[in-house]
Amino acid sequence: MNILVSGGLGYIGSHTCVALLEAGHSVIIVDNLSNSKKETAEKIINITNKQVIFYEVDLTDDKAVSMIFDNHKIDGVIHFAALKAVGESIKKPIEYYYNNLVSTMVLVKYCLKYNVNKFVFSSSATVYGENRVPFNELMELFPTTNPYGETKVMSERILKDVAQANPMFSVSILRYFNPVGAHESGLIGESPNGIPNNLMPYITQVAKGKLKKLKVFGDNYPTVDGTGVRDFIHVVDLAEGHVAALNNLKKGVHIYNLGTGKGTSVLELINAFEEANGIKIPYEVVDRRPGDIAECYADVTKAYQELGWRASRDIFRMCKDAWNFEKNNSLDY
Ligand code: NAD
Ligand code: WQD
Image (cartoon, rainbow, N blue to C red; front, side):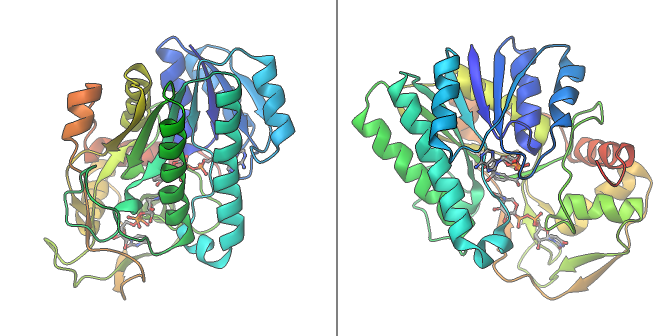
């Protein structure tokens, strides 16, 4: 199939392009480079030995998106493009609502116009808010604590309404847990701008000596060792989950958790990283980070039963591949 991948040069999008190409699909990447680099397209080509088409286009640009649908016979869309920094979204709500919602609406509008009925959407475990773990897809959603999370809740709602009005439309909403790690080649991975907000890129930058010490946000949660517990998933497993979702699309809207189903605490992740890579990670415990929940992990039964997919890479592999990418990439990657 010809798959339009929005945000395809970003962290999860680039790994998914590799998985799609390896599964025999063609990809048309649309990305405005607001959080990625053009060279990533070359890296995808290097890894797979296959060509990709790349448009440097902002998805809120209606005319430019229309032209892409005019130029290509598109069979399906995987929509990754979004702004994703939780803290920044609280400071810049309009940028987040505008970018994330308008992008989704423009893409869906042209899917309907050009009879593209296959649509896979990047949602997030953040929509579960303070539900009880493990989170399952039938749970009622709690309000999230930030505009970023709300854009995911609202986008899910938009897609449900569109599918209701257009019975041929098939949508898979994928709720990701905590993607970490990188492609085994070390060519593509996560390279956040500035000081990382997320745990794994912070750890790899401490390991590299770019940052001095990790701050552990709280050790008095009601968890195994008092630190936060998350469902870390290897980004390559996540990428493969998209191929499975695309291959198993059904009419209407279907929601799947993509996680491992296993919780790992912050201290357990630090220990796993040290063991996997033989590097000490200095840390200090500081206050809780506002908005954090104690535990977040998935019930992954539905994805396995309906998509035949489950994550296979363990926490050590995640730590090894995250470090392999960090150490192979210079500061300006
Ligand atoms: P990323 O920032 O690495 O990738 C997003 C890509 O979209 C970037 O390349 C960016 O340049 C592009 N983009 C943003 N707005 C655009 C626009 N208007 N037009 C064109 N391109 C645009 O992020 P990621 O981690 O790969 O996340 C991908 C998706 O998964 C996002 O929707 C994100 O909200 C969701 N998600 C991510 C995580 C995570 O922890 N990384 C967890 C859950 C959900
Ligand atoms: C994980 C754990 C922190 C950094 C975020 C978004 C979520 C989703 C995935 C997009 C927590 C602790 C972290 C640090 C720490 N993204 N931590 N020191 O918050 O689970 O999820 O990314 O949809 O919406 O909120 O991920 O990696 O930031 O934190 O102790 O320097 O690590 O408190 O317990 P989070 P994270």
